[in-house]
Length: 78
Image 1 (tube, rainbow, N blue to C red):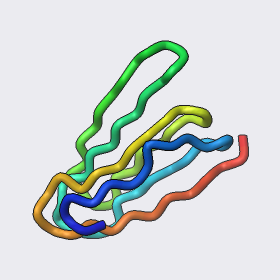
Image 2: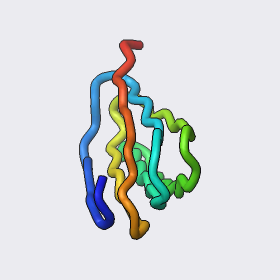
Image 3: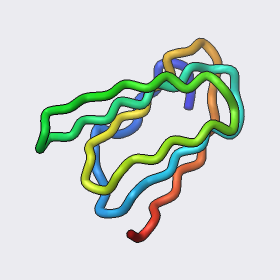
Image 4: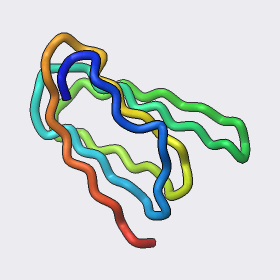
């Protein structure tokens, strides 16, 4: 993801796992549970950091840094 890039504001029927695999950026992961109104923002600054998003939860990923980051995401059947 290039600096300033945004992916998401969506949900999945399966759990999703996102791993930052390379880059020096700051990845912001915003998770919103519409049923409870709870919102959580996590900043990921290290490579090989993994974050799990529960099925049905809306989420957005942003590159808040000034360098590109590379991530891999996988959907997991529950």
